[in-house]
Length: 225
Image 1 (cartoon, rainbow, N blue to C red):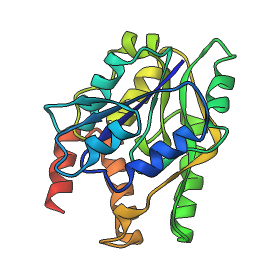
Image 2 (cartoon, helix red, strand yellow; image 1 turned 180 degrees about the vertical axis):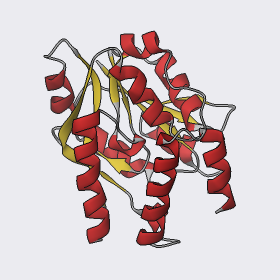
Image 3 (cartoon, helix red, strand yellow; image 1 turned 120 degrees about the horizontal axis):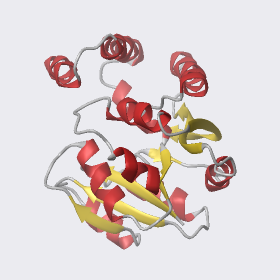
Image 4 (cartoon, rainbow, N blue to C red; image 1 turned 60 degrees about the vertical axis):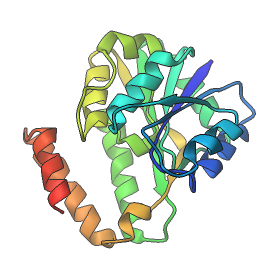
């Protein structure tokens, strides 16, 4: 079985469609919502949709993902953002990669719900990076064998780039695969400051991370705006 783990914080608006996309798969999935203290109807929405709800005392995505991973009973863990929607063949794609015994996990190609050519270009670049380097951002819906998740100790306690760090650890245990069809992610985080400004900041921060700057220092930069 596949366990789907969704970290949430005030996602009552997006969560119903995400859970509906999972229900439409008509697969025996274990769905775990790990909420970090939402003040809206996120928890009740999740429970009404039949998801198992865990409460996190810490508002940090890595911590929430680890809570969900530890509680999951499936052989495969599938980490999904609350504003990302899966396709009809997503589960089929996950199962197919594990036919190869050296594969430990992977992630999906990604598309944004936006007509922006720039965002489309970033998705194309992300797919190349994922295929060549085995590195995935969280909104690419990373999946992994639970045994390997436990072996590497889950996600590091990092405020940002916990996804890249996690993928690096997984690559030490086997191969990572980039699969399709693409998942579709909300473009909401680009709306306030504009697509170009956010894309440039993402590139700059990712460059600094790969140059060795700590995730804690990078988070301070993000908070300063």
